[in-house]
Length: 186
Image (cartoon, rainbow, N blue to C red):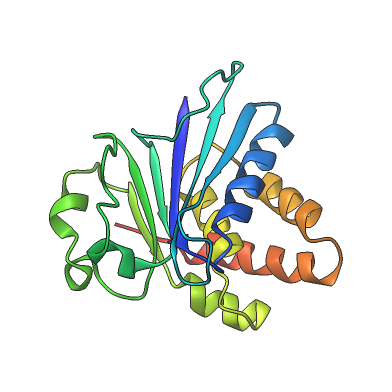
């Protein structure tokens, strides 16, 4: 089972990202579920959401404690919580940043992962360019498809269009495709 934990802050679309990723997997004939988790429901508060993807029916309903993939929408969370808790030894990390892993202070945690399993993308910058809003969620989903074959970019784009029909969806698809090309694996 491929398990995802998405970390971000209220207003960045963490819950929507989980829903769209789950829908993209479903579009490919996989079983999937998205589970939001809220603390303080306010703009800027830490938010986490979970996604599970499998070829078989998923019976678990609890939070993802041993993620295969971490998506970090706000790198300031590295100093606020233990984002890496439970990450599998062969896991993936996708970070919305323009900074290096050393600048983020996470080179030790990410250095243990296999080559090519850590990626960065300037998701907020791409969101501002394509969407005129600092919402990195769809951008990061596009970047994820460049790191792993778990879900394909076309399925993510279809999920985005289902969530945001019309011009807003088209702009988000454009941003996701740009991130798919821009993701830098380390």
